[in-house]
Length: 292
Image (cartoon, rainbow, N blue to C red):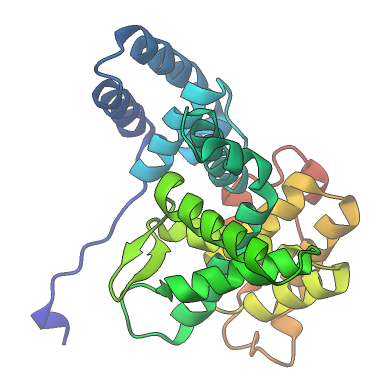
């Protein structure tokens, strides 16, 4: 009953608050390296004058990610998909450059480790759709099995060598990258839900054009898959080609005409279009800036 609860509505950060938070978190994070702190803050403030960058400064998490990327690369991507993907690349490069025993392994097996994150993201996103738990969890045995499956898919033969590589991949994924974190019952989960959705999106988009269209059409009506859907669209716009961008706009234009969704009762096409524009996906490709 409404009288038994207090509703709190969260708002996006406004520009002054986002900039203030960026300065604050950088000052705390780099308090022992003042020169680097000042350099990152200077880069951040310069980027904050760009309208495209202001669009990304909506949450504390995204502001934090922006400062991490600026520390490593010095420049920021233009949309939310590229922001989160660049964050993954930033963490990966940082760990690969450290003088640890796993650093060479991270460099050599980056494709397999990336593939594993994508497979885990999709598996957890599917599980979360029907789970009553606060977060989705994968057991370490299931994580290792996904690693083995991927190694076999790229041509490795089952045996002791595959087992050794799979064990190292699981170790590198859970101990060095710290994107998948320990959970109850000897399991693992993504520490940040948006990273789970990002990896699920990459798994859904590593397909043929026909399959991509099917994935976009199937997940478009679902609130559970909305962020993943936007990430799929974000990758499509960021990496092209043009005919794949057309697939996204085609789904937006026709989703409410589908026999599988009562668009006459609850139209979702305009909402999808608003998400895409809000994410800035067409900022660099204005040809797709409007849908009919």
